[in-house]
Figure 1 (cartoon, one colour):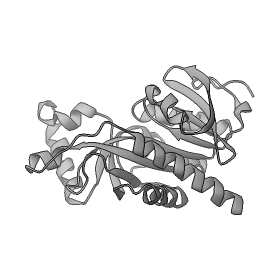
Figure 2 (cartoon, helix red, strand yellow):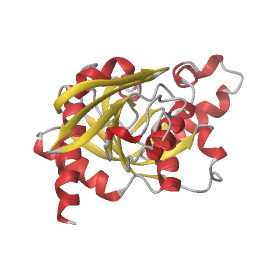
Figure 3 (tube, rainbow, N blue to C red):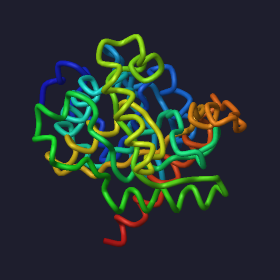
Figure 4 (cartoon, rainbow, N blue to C red):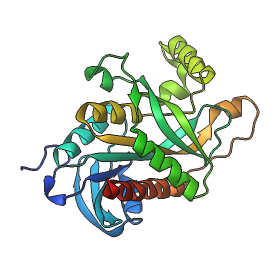
Length: 252
């Protein structure tokens, strides 16, 4: 096949598994946790390394920030033969029990973004693959991490979350935020809903593990709000989750 227009490569990599950070700057760090890591390709926001996990080839490719570039990444990786995709990223906590440094494993995502509306009506839920979610939970347990599994909010505007009062639509943003908090939403991020919806439509297994950076709800409540910008634990959980899936897939 010809190299795909956006990610810039074809199916010659031979990988069925991929780990997807948003930030191109994190790709090399993640790849170092794989066996035999090597730079593979770079085009636009899509920086790609190739390595191995439990004897299987694994791509690590950045998706950029937000839904549109994530959708392109999922679509084109699928065309090259990738059928399991795990997002590793960051989030801001929403539930008071979620503290900076905790892992959040998203089994579902609130579709408060625009990309997935061009795939399927809003009533259709954005949910992760159960096998991938279970593998990430087991990975977190194996790493003795503090982890939470549940629903996250997926948004398009970072500043719409952090400065809603100055937005003309701030009344809606603030009311919906409080609704999500009351409903038990764990955290907020920007790519999971797109990953899940596009993956669902293509028949790709998807999952997501996130490092909690901070929690503005804890801060507002006068609770401790430690900040954690170190994604190492989330990276280890994603790689361990891939390893568990490889072993599970071999057993059939």
